[in-house]
Length: 236
Image (cartoon, rainbow, N blue to C red):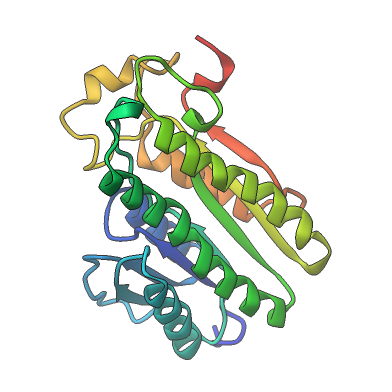
């Protein structure tokens, strides 16, 4: 497949867990992939370009998109997967915790999405996917989550706004609102976290990947918040 016809996906938070699963899934679809995280290793696959950096730093976003275009010639999909969760009582959050969550969850989305959309406009279309949390819409008294709600809720609102702003220009924007997923970040808490979901289990990385790939292959779907949350959004 030529570099001009092959599609290219950019995935943030790509070194492990959901991000690594998404890299593998997009490669199976035949996409070239640009993956970024603070600690991501170089890939032996010539169709995977890795860029180390803190997504909260706008310079990282600029390096990722520039490197992707230089290597592969285009950007077709951006998955804003990078995110952090810090649970705390609202009055106990520190300035450092606030800045960390705003930096990764919101600032990290902002610049890379601007740059990706600018490139997509020159190509005539593209797709943005945000990984968010059901907690942004359905608070749980057992899970202190004000900063998660603030940041991931912001992404969900931006999803709809971007979908409408670019609907006539070939760019779709969707989101997955997740329950708790089995990743290295949640290891050691599986039994407790499973109980938060009506289905009685935590989500798997494959559940998230399936949701993202559905959205990738659904050209009439934009502005959608797809809940992949084990029934949390339905009720308790």
